[in-house]
Length: 491
Ligand code: NAD
Image (cartoon, rainbow, N blue to C red; front, side, top):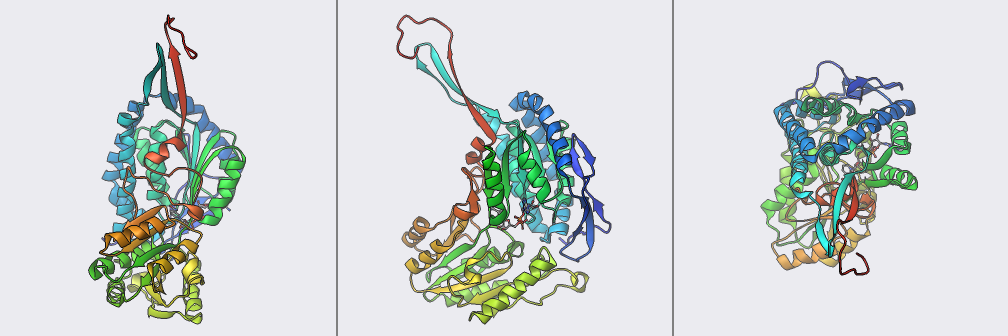
């Protein structure tokens, strides 16, 4: 479907105490990557704005956390219905401010709904364990909300990444403060309105617009108990350090440089689609995108299929735009530098444009660099665009040495028809999410999402069952009601 780009500038403010309120800082604009035109405006939040919002969230925490789980879940059921009712409207906004195609935006929201459905199931599984540990003495676990929790999100999935945490954190009884990317703040308007319509009590869900100052104020606030962050490794590290130094819980997901190990026996058609779609999807702006193709031996037929599929992509229809003009310039220059260093261009997307309507947008067609040297910029730095760097290898062992040498650890996939070879790659991969004949190995709920090494600071994962401990404290209750005749050391 063609993206409906707003023809007026939409204003979005902070959402605090159930009402929209302008931040006191300077204004900033939102440009559509499709057209380069302004489609929105917002205001940076100051420390005072953040303090006021978090105080308000804290003031309603006790009531919300003591609301029975089943009642909180009912609100989230309504939230799901509203999101699905409005999915097209929200998808157009996500695409307009982020540059994704309409179907990519819709898929991102549906993935968010999947996390929401996991959260809805918590009422059935979060009963805790209880047993008689000694005669007349019972021990039980109780999972309790921790308080005001915050989530700082990146530009590249304006709805999906926040939806990794909103449903689980809220359903478990926390008050949630969201700081969206200042590049894509408009989506927060629609998510907050959906939650309000669903009946979320005032103050339980807060949106703070802004950037560094707002994030620092959120982390530092005495009532903020936990911070989940998703973004670049550089900022993930800063946020992790600042939050944990204050003795607070932090889970900070960073950037990536994902590898695909391509073996000669791989099915060329599966490779053509799977690998091409992995590096061109969302114009390469996703933390799970294929970035380096470790081509082991003679894989020419498969590479030809990848190239054919990539060059058939229609910009503006099947492939979206790059987030900003600066990022587009960086990508064009990085491709140039790789060629100067000896890489060969199998496919050059520079200068490609979609139809005239979008000619002032930020566009780069799929680009494939061959004979990229291990350790070079194109092989080791996260470029975050539709660029695939092919590194030639003579063995799986050499390929895995290259994969292991990169600091990141988000995703790694292998394409092969041989189960034993696939297992070899799975075992050696230094990545939190591994795929076999899958270009984007995102785990589906309840399997949790998260990388390792420089792709994640903190313990646990951000979705699924491995996220529950992050959003709760576990209280251990030991009970005795009657005097027992046969005392032992603990009763
Ligand atoms: P970014 O790190 O620039 O920004 C992320 C968030 O941090 C934004 O909300 C931003 O306002 C805030 N921020 C920026 N500078 C800050 C500072 N100095 N102090 C405090 N907060 C600051 O990331 P981005 O460009 O928006 O997103 C792209 C990056 O996110 C890529 O590296 C991508 O791999 C990564 N990402 C990772 C995952 C994952 O699951 N690991 C998922 C999506 C995106």
